[in-house]
Image (cartoon, rainbow, N blue to C red; front, side, top):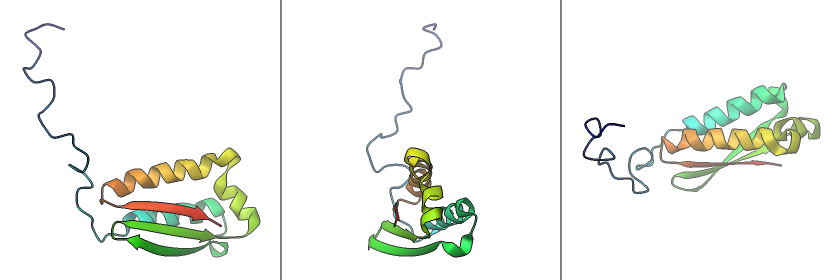
Length: 107
């Protein structure tokens, strides 16, 4: 790369400390929890067989306890846990925007 094209600063000068930018303030939005419940209902193919219980551990952290039939449980977890792992990653990324943490537990 040419020296003329390089900027004097390597980065934009924004703070990269943890807690800055997205997620610096906790909101009261339930969008990440709603998204998780919607995706789990779609994956189950039987929305009536899946039941959710939201438990607020402390402000900014919520646990969603999922109870369902054994046949549906296998479908939600997926082969070698790949489905639930991908869902947890997606919900983690979505909840960062709101300054929250959402945990999903399947029983």
